[in-house]
Amino acid sequence: MQHLPALLISLALFALSSCSSEPEKYDLVITGVHVVDIEEDRILPNQYVAITDNRIQRTAMMDSLVLANDQRMLDGEGRYVMPGLWDNHVHFRGGDSLAGENKALLPLFLYHGVTTVRDAGGDLAPQVISWRNAIAAGKLDGPNIFTPGYKIDGAQPAWPGSLKVTDEASLERALDSLESMEVNFIKTYDGSLTPEMYYATIDAALERGYKTTGHMPLNADLRKAIETGLKGSEHLYYVLKAAADSLKRAENASYKADYLTSLVRHYEEESAREIFRLLAENEVYVTPTLYIGKVLSELADTDHSQDLLLDYIGEGIQQTYSRRLESALRAKEAGNNSREILLEEGFKKMILPMFESGVEILSGSDCGPFNSYVYPGSSLIEEMKMLGECGLLPYQVLATSVINGPAFFELQEFYGSVEKGKVADLILLDANPLEDIANLETLSIVIKGGKVMGENELKTMVEQAKTP
Image (cartoon, one colour):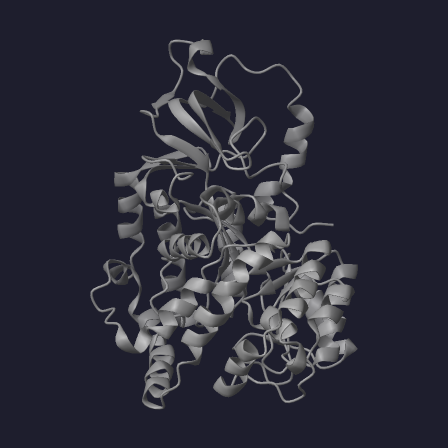
């Protein structure tokens, strides 16, 4: 059983009813566009896209277009149309006092062409679920949201709002609570979660029809987690540890700099190939979050005060950035460059071999409060650029967002391409993203929920959402 937003419940009904003859008139017809076929790495030139009830009804060459005189039209003017982006790792958090500032971030995603996000959990679960439902109902502007609600952690959670799981009884209570909230998946965290309860969470969640992703206790075994039914791994610490074979059984593993850099030094190609094979065979999705690693590794030496997007981040959220900044300054003073070593000598070098082994990679930004200067929307594009720098071709990078994002939730039937039957969450670009992933920055129009938003509309939406 999949646990999906209200927006998607009607999709199966739509699929059953779409066998009837196509209407002569559509809600919207986009004309004169080049369709970006990501899966086949090709452009379908000079097309039109017909949309009704937020679903694509037809795509075809312009010379076959015959419509009523009063048909609602949008001239694509030779732009490139593709599915809206999915950011597969974002955060909404900071407590009730920052709920409004978190909500104000939603239009920023749309402004950059992100039409769906996968929340990675926080302490604002009721609010996030409320936003998810309001967006699905067309009552709030923002990306579709998939959320785990609260994270599952151990007796001493690392983040406020996390559910304490220490035994089978507390695990069942936690899952009962999350299920009552109609969350979409389960997210674990490794603040104090024991390996035993980590494995038990994966198993119990799977029995209830939930996929589990998240952080793994560093003294747990990724191989055992995969065998238990793990479906996602956030960040690359745990894959790196599994590939550092001689350290994989370390009992006192922690996030201390010397241990993390030792993982890089003990990386073994043979162990890496083995863990990549297991991840691929068991369809475990890995979200690298490279860009935040880059931002944090450079944080002590970078002045972000003039960042153009900083004006759209609330003062309360900006104050949460100090935690990471102070940590970076302490690391610099101590001569600790472990973040740079992890990123440049570890994580980035893993991407291409992992991809070539068949591992499903998800692009995710890790944006949100506490993650300093990693801005909603733009950070996903930066993440995708970095995946390209690691050796993935543009169409392969695009797939990590718009194809693999839906696939994690088994929603390929409704997302991932511009063709009949797919949800009409679309973006129009001035330049071809199959030539250069940076062309995602040439966004001109976003179409979501039947609403057409050009640059002016998007800018107005973002300005209106700004908190005082």
